[in-house]
Length: 250
Image (cartoon, rainbow, N blue to C red; front, side, top):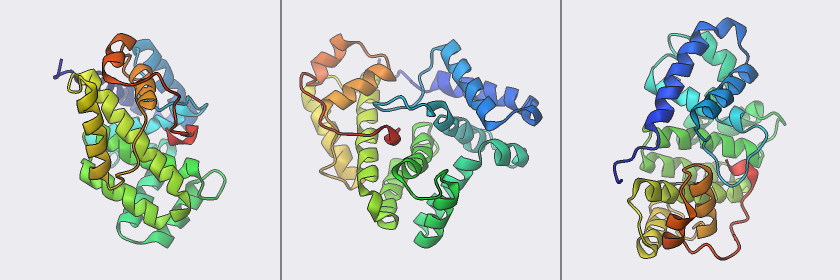
């Protein structure tokens, strides 16, 4: 069970879908691609990457997965720059902002995020979507956790007014990795689960930002379809979720 890969099928589906999109690129809008992605996931029983909430723009956010596979997995961003400019302009903007943040160019990063935001302001949704791009790279194997931790910490420096959003994303990431560990068979009891959560929080540089087991349970069921029977052995889920997380976190 420890060798189960929750992303192999997802990656293959994304690669195949990108092939279809390239053939039809002149006829497709971003909304069309998001709808194609939704139908493809539903047909193949794949769940989008998400936390507690199911926001109405979930599949627009999930385009980050297509973008990451297209750019880092297949390298087609250079071969089809018009496609990436037309469909993945948001993800390109978020990555540009991340690069500026990592370079310490905070004012430039903030300007990019304001331009990228539909509301022309840096709000929690914009910051969460930027972090989602990095999170997707990490999950799909194109970024390491140390680099992701640096992005989280530098984002907090660059946009201190969105500290709650950053910390919520830390909780989301830890909860997601615990759920993934349960799915893979690597986390099998309450003691190891608790140690895993706390060790991750320390590694990320947010030692007090730890998700509740209830939050882990939601992701375990929503994304990985893990049965309650297994979760009840590993998680303490008979209490109310205290994470107070928002739908913008996904």
